[in-house]
Image 1: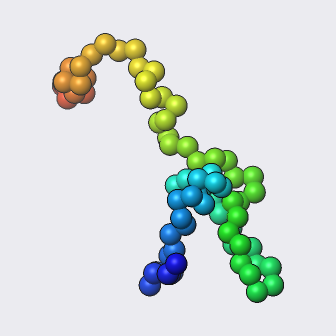
Image 2 (image 1 turned 90 degrees about the vertical axis):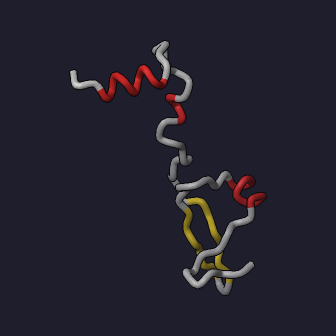
Length: 75
């Protein structure tokens, strides 16, 4: 594994999946002797997408074009 010029490194997918690390997950680096460990921040809530809970709950039976027309109308 190589560190970029910006100090970034890619965490392998199988490790992210095993630890439940998703975008916006908070992590810490813990030093123990000459080793450094990456750990999920304690008390951090699992990362969720802002609108994920709302997906599929709309009850309006309008087309996208009808909704766009409403948002663009003058009153």
